[in-house]
Length: 88
Image (tube, rainbow, N blue to C red; front, side, top):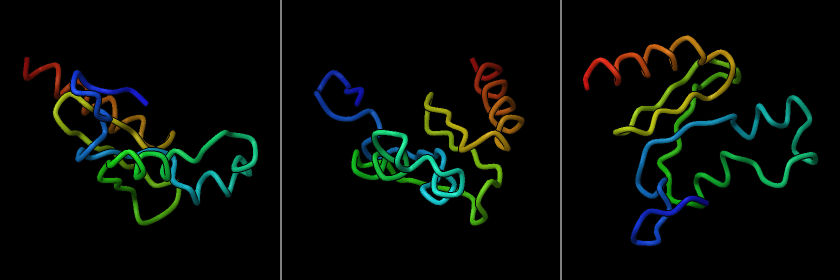
């Protein structure tokens, strides 16, 4: 629930990804965690995006906010970080 200097969610209106609710259900974590990240991001006003297929790689880049959906996203996430660093 990180907020910016105006008290608004840092995810408000920004692209974001994470484990999907479907992925959480498949690994039976829905009862073990306090909230589903996909649901929470949407509640915080994020423009949630994901791969059409569970466990498929997916990365979002919105300014300095770079997120990977799941372990399959690690390679693309690393490339997105390198790309962002090379722009500086």
